[in-house]
Length: 323
Image (spheres, one colour):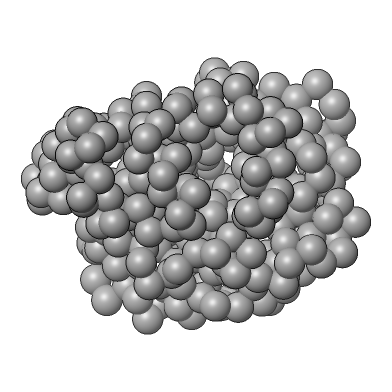
């Protein structure tokens, strides 16, 4: 897919906003409006649809007609129906092939961006990216809202009890704390990430892991209204112990199956990461140590689990005994 050259709409390098869509007609216009209201002027919206059966495509097309030509561009999804990670991969590949954008931001169809989001990310990335060849990632907090955009939690980080200072590679191998819709990467990280291996769990998790080869920065301000509506691919589920026990009681077998599945997926993803690092001539020591540790018996893993699992105790024990 060839992306058309985008005329400069204002100062600053071009930012590609990658918008992956699938049956999002109900909320996507509000997201497009928030992108159009960004204070950073030089952005281009790349859209890839995963085979929507609702009016998503027509809503985006109608919105594009109201905007400057080339502001929204369609990317052909070669294999629709394979899910969100592969849909984003099509967008990532198109942006990388074109090479015009200095920075790339991931965008979900059902959220709303605050007007200064891209501007704040660009400022942070400009300071972070001391060398264009260094993989860099910037991410921010989010405000969790309901389907009508009423605040549920002022801070996603606090709601999910995420310790940003503990986001080392050993910890990120087991759990993703970098939310895609609040993430920007540079071209160096994009090129390191592509192509996505078949065993990648999610595109944002993969980028978070690879950011450990360069530099990463967290913005404490919530810059996205993270809409929760029951149909989210990935959502902000309550971390309160009572709610979590209730989920186990009400849906125990499926909950246990999801935990076990994620354990296998994280192991596969770590193996894919080791292969990518070796392929690019990068240090794989921490990943190698993690893979060795994961293959030990549960009782031998018990002594070292604190290095890799730094979340709530219930999470730690689920990972330790079910992975």
